[in-house]
Image 1: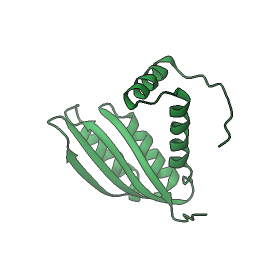
Image 2 (image 1 turned 30 degrees about the vertical axis):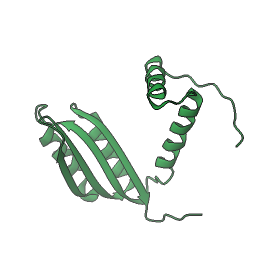
Image 3 (image 1 turned 60 degrees about the horizontal axis):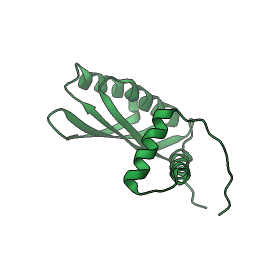
Image 4 (image 1 turned 90 degrees about the vertical axis):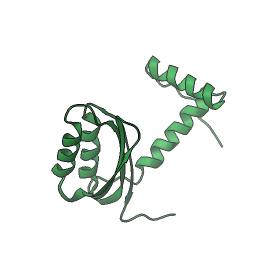
Length: 138
């Protein structure tokens, strides 16, 4: 595989975390980890289309003891209308919960939901996996 050497500006704290991760995983090359991260990011987003109907899952981890967070999570999900199809809740500990939200609807509406969930204090992790209705494998 051909490679291209490039320079990228990355905040110091991310480089420190990347180096710690590389050490923990036994990866000797920072470039290899960065390359894998870019490939993963591209693979996650290449099916995304703001105007097409998308389907998938949003996973969040949050501290349910943080004020009225549980109520606010429900309000955010209701605000996006028919996008949320079902939510599954799992207790991770006395404080922490994981919720997976199955979604189907306009891509832009789903990504707005992802953004709003990310902004809530007490939400520590938000991830999504989406596919288009017109998925074709070449």
